[in-house]
Each structure stands twice: as C-alpha cells, then as structure tokens.
Length: 229
Ligand SMILES: *Cc1c(COP(=O)(O)O)cnc(C)c1O
Image (cartoon, rainbow, N blue to C red; front, side, top):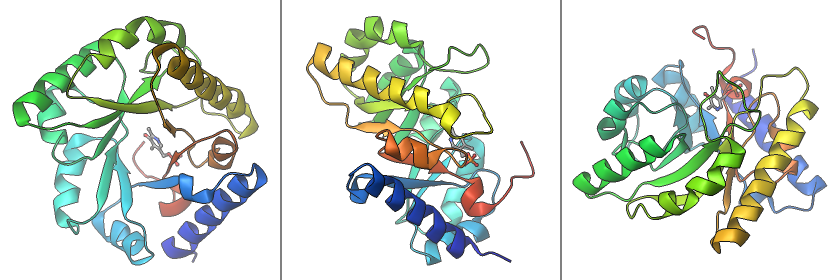
C-alpha cells in the first residue's frame, strides 16, 4: 500500500516540477493538506512526513479534530462558512480562504472586532458563474472592493477559486488564468497587493502552480478517497 508519506512526497515533487517548468521559485507555493472526512490518525501520518499546514471545510468537524492534534500546526478554512459558525472558526484558523459574499465579510469583520482578532482572508470568486457554487461573480467583485477593503479587521490577501469538476486538469487552466488576471487588475485599480492565489486541487494542482497559485489545496492525492461526499 502506498503511504501518506509517499503521497505527500509525490505531491511536493509535482509542485516543484510545475514551478520549475514555469520558472517559479517552489518556495512561493504552500501545500494545504485538506483533511476533511479523514481522522486525526491520518493527519498524524502527514505530520510525521513533515506537513504542518492543513485545511478543513466544516467548522463542526474541525472543532472536534483540531484539538486532538498538536497545537503547533497551522489550519486554513476552505469551505462555505456559515455566519453562525464564525465565532467558533476564528480561533481555530489562521486564514479563511472562502469569503464568498459581502454579508459574510461584514459579519466576519464584526465578530473579529468583538473577539479582538485580525483574520487573514481570501475572496472566493465563482469563476465559471455556476449556480451551485458560492463566491463573488468576477464582474461584481470590482464593485464590492471598496466596501470590502474598508472592513478594518479583515486582512484581505488574495483570491480563491474552485473551478467546475473536470476529468482533465487542462479544463481548469482558463479559470486559473482568469483568477490571476482578475487579481492583477484589482491590484492596479485599487493600488494594493493581493499576493495569494488559492487554486488547484488533486485534479489540477500542477496546472494551478503553472498559472501562479501560491496555495494549493490537496486532499485525495495525499489521504486517499473520501467515503463521505
Ligand atoms: C475538498 C476540498 C479540496 C480538496 O479536494 P481534493 O480533490 O480531495 O484534492 C480543496 N478545496 C476545497 C474547497 C475543498 O472543499
């Protein structure tokens, strides 16, 4: 059987290859190992293989799992954050990848203020305009930007996307390019830095790295198939 350590080594190697191919420094790319549905024992195997950055997509699951694990790990939240879970999520996660509406941003800002926190956050963009997905429509984000940037407790560091599921990694490329170009134009228009691009999963992370990802979110390629959807 292939081990989690072997899987991690392979994923890291693919990230390094994709970076080399496009002349990027592999040190610019962080691997977020997505542990949703997987028990703490499997996370421990990844820790033994040197992984320290992990991601979860449900607050309830994270609240049970994270306290079982060493406290020196870093956790990112990558799922749809319900407003009534914000207070529980904030102390667990160093970054929220998935601010997907103005209302969520405002509520996050309000609760962060009450809790005395300054969360790092990314704006999720619904790159393919899918009705089933959360996120800002790309053409709406520009119009929302001033209000989002005025929220004093949020440190907005970049953009995130979750393109349509596809068999071929190449199918995601145009969405990754779109996210990067949107980032570039927001930086120019609003005279700010949005250094983080969270894009790429098991199906397409090497392509995402080629197109500028700084955070890749990989679950299945490290931990195997999930039993619960
Ligand atoms: C589950 C999940 C991932 C990881 O997906 P894999 O295909 O298992 O690599 C990445 N991002 C988000 C938002 C997820 O929910």
